[in-house]
Image (tube, rainbow, N blue to C red):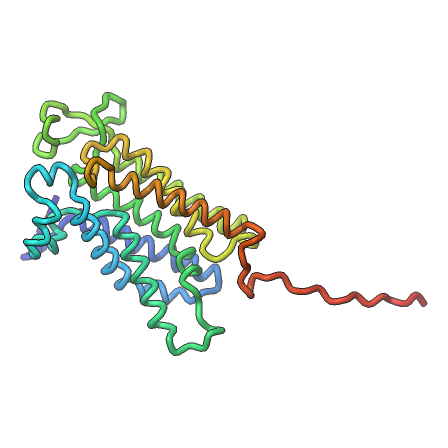
Length: 290
């Protein structure tokens, strides 16, 4: 869906994605301020994170194109031999896993460059900022999924449930031309992401003294992976590598890996950072009775 502003053609999908990015940055800046971190880091890094996220999302799509595109000859090999098509993000084709990886890498590099001249005791860690960003990322995903609604994509299996979603004939997949109503998969994921955001904000406050740096981000990975794993069962046009559902397999690995790391980090044998180590208690001096 597009609209015109003078000679410019504006894609509503892109506007929604940008709104999601700004909302994510705003929430992250508030969370940074609450934690005593400089909120201006968030706005300074936003452009780099968006660029990294878009590049990562596009690369993920190129490496794992959905079956409907493969059937039309738009494969990974096609993209590699048609570089102009590979960068044509306005034609659609972005993958959330790649966006998180690309955005995270951009944030890591930004922090390295931003803090390279600061003394070690003034530097903040990537894990701290990953925790700050996690609730905002979930919010941005929740908003961004509505871009799939305006494009009539990311719908699930056919259904007659009261909240069924009508899909215009030109957007229906091959073999489903005569079926009009489907699961609003984008809506399910959007709701799941809102719940994830709320959980992360609550946990970050309720268990603040017991959490380690990076725990909130690990929790984000766990919760998102669980929801995405099960929603993939409803997806008709799931990206595949051979016969394997690429996104579902990745979510299983990410969810299990994040859970294992979270539990290991809170075990007795995991080394504790110096700033988290308990301080030795001084000897108490007995007061003499007068």
